Length: 215
Image (tube, rainbow, N blue to C red; front, side, top):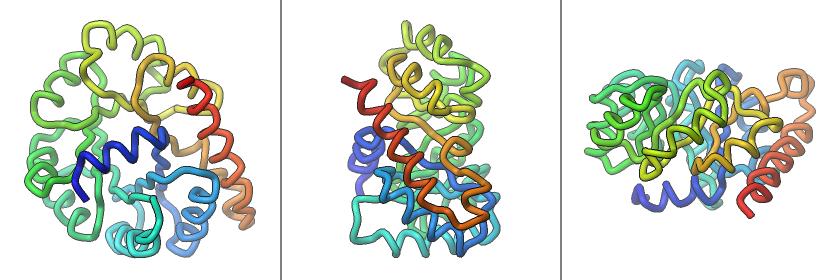
């Protein structure tokens, strides 16, 4: 898939679900619940046991859907390449790593490094990032995004880390392209008890907040 199409899928959806540290059998059920709730961009973090195999499995599982699968917590170019070969269409990093950006661009895959300061944001974009992940967003707040969007409104941004139903609307109205959401979607008690309908409901609520905020 061309990276332009991947970017459109993420921005159209408005939500990237961050799936971290979860057993493989639960990941499959969580993915089904997220899709039912309207979340179609799925990030599997590389600090999850068997993450590369999971990326391949989930990619195959959603092949005939509108969903896309990517890798998160990618710290080096070698890991980025492994994730891409397993089927990842996009790669998130918690930091700004030039090797990760270069590998993703070499393979024509979307790359979203983690940044915080205006300097990091500009450096990431000039180095070839397609989006920048403002992280941790919960610490920086929607007002911070709004402020840096003033001089840097040409750089697409996606807050991650601390995004919830309570602040999602404010982040969208601050001008971001999408939201990276983990804990606010992944209710641990519901997953433990196999109440996956809770995940679906949270996904529906979040996608509606994004849709309404964009109007």
